[in-house]
Length: 224
Image (cartoon, rainbow, N blue to C red; front, side):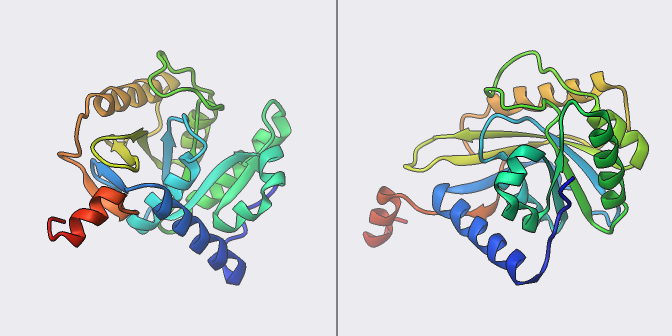
């Protein structure tokens, strides 16, 4: 497997580039719900509807003060190995030996202070709003082996009244290891709450991004 290789100058470079790329592509990252602030590690599980999802979790982890890691399919991480510098590590889906190795490695990461291991239990990209979610058992097994608290997240990319999209994150309540059905229910509930949002009311901005032409024009005219 490919392990995470965070730290050093290469890690700083990739982290800086990803942050710049995110801020230049979106108007901001907005969160509703409490982000875990404990020293103990947490297992973060999220929907997976967009290429940007892993970078969203990276930015969210930085804002929360987490030591963030993310599971990625090995064939993709081998192609973009630089992502290991910001915490990506691999799994080979469908191979029992690889799954066991990744499970043990992820569990060891969760023992680190302020660690956040992020996983997409759907196992593949699926359009936002698809019901019902079909989850793989890895998230349940990792929670049971590690004993970490589990944090459900739902991510949505939304255009409101601005040129660039906003990234909305709905954070559910943390819970202990549970049967797989619990994870599905938590994610679907978070998705329903997020889909109902028609504005940024109730959300807190944790990462600011780029302003559009209208916002820059308003600022010049003294209306921004």
